[in-house]
Image (cartoon, rainbow, N blue to C red; front, side, top):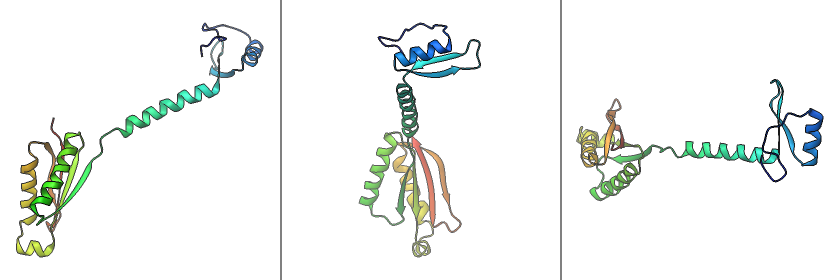
Length: 157
């Protein structure tokens, strides 16, 4: 590392001179390429090197955590219109922020006996309301009894 007492150029010196120099300047000797000819040793403060390495790892973790995560929403067939609007507003806001969104529509068996298409009707209504805000990533996938549907959306491109 460069500093007021540290030469910025590369010097070829003996190991004993390097040890003496590092003790005089309170530096640590770190092997950069021990197997080379001549071996390369770096005189630096180990704490500074560890700090830089830690900061680089922290940046990588932050970059990895900044990936937009998928947001999940649950709707029940027979949901009231104001509740549907409130949930859809939240879903739309996440889509506008760049998040993938997934919603699941649940239907009770009692509701299915009264109206076998209750789940898919709600899915179609939600899809119509989201058409301007996101692109369908995965079409509606029902389970065997068609009591729930799972749909995925991604932000508009």
